[in-house]
Length: 98
Image 1 (cartoon, helix red, strand yellow):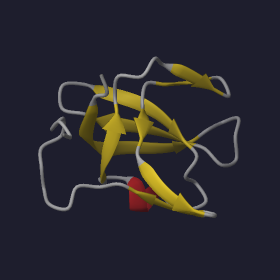
Image 2 (tube, one colour; image 1 turned 60 degrees about the vertical axis):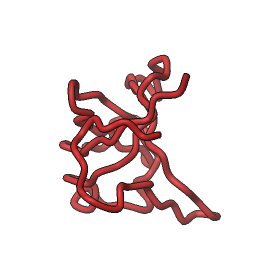
Image 3 (cartoon, helix red, strand yellow; image 1 turned 135 degrees about the horizontal axis):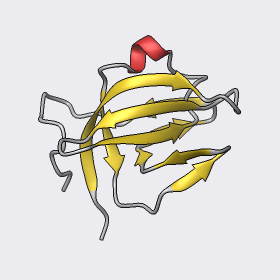
Image 4 (cartoon, one colour; image 1 turned 90 degrees about the vertical axis):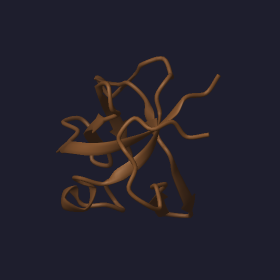
């Protein structure tokens, strides 16, 4: 069963081993998880920090270029354009997506 939650990006840092990846610390309500995401070409650190996003939380952790990712953010894309999926209105971190 898929578990999607609303999360808030608290920290953004460059991946030390990849030019296109960020390391994100995301508050999903009851926990802060780490995500590795290939969105560096489309978003600056300032644009991401504090942004509410939708996170796929119950994936097995994966290691991307030596850094563990504990979930996956949801985004839509066409070509090189990537747009994060975000709640339309304010909702608490950890809210379930149904």
